[in-house]
Amino acid sequence: MSAEIFVDTNLLYYANTESPDARHARARELVESLWSEAGKAAISVQILQELHVNLIRKAGLTPELSWQRVSDYPAWKVIDNDRTLLASAFEIQSRWKLSHWDSLIVAAAQRSGAPVLWSGDLAEGQRYDKVQVVNPLR
Image 1 (tube, one colour):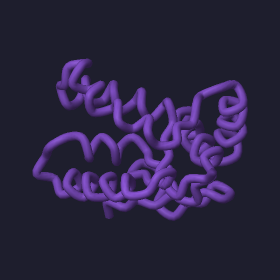
Image 2 (spheres, rainbow, N blue to C red; image 1 turned 120 degrees about the vertical axis):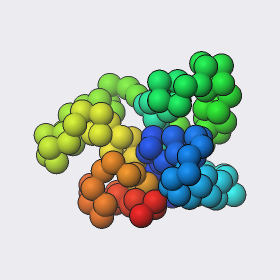
Image 3 (spheres, one colour; image 1 turned 90 degrees about the vertical axis):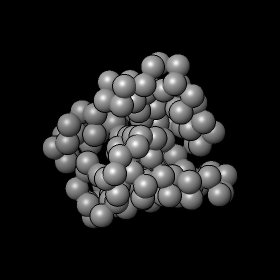
Image 4 (spheres, rainbow, N blue to C red; image 1 turned 90 degrees about the horizontal axis):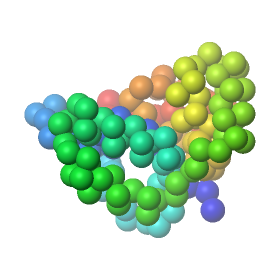
C-alpha cells in the first residue's frame, strides 16, 4: 500500500520542539493531521535516526525523552535502509546532484509510493520522477 505523504526530518523536528517560530505550531498541526488515516504517512529509518539525534543535540532532550517522542512514528509506514535503497540513492545523487543524505530521503520517498515529499530542506516544487517536494511550512 502506498502512502500519501513522505515526511522529512525537519517537519518532525519542528513538530516535536517548542519555539515562538510559527513553523513549530504549523508543523504540529500538519503532523497531527497525518494520524487521521492509517497508511497516510511514511518515513524512513534514516528520518527516525535524524530526528532522534537532533532532539538530543539541538533540542537538548535526553535520549530517553527523545525516544518517547520518536517511538510513535514507527506506526507509520517505515522504509528500511537496505542495499537496494542505497543503490537507488546513488543513482538519484548522480542524476539530480543531491547530497548523499538527501538522495536517501528521495529514494525512500519513492519506495513508499507517496507522490508528495514534505520537506523544508529540498527545493519546493522539485519533482523526482513521481515524487514532488512540497514545503507545507511556507
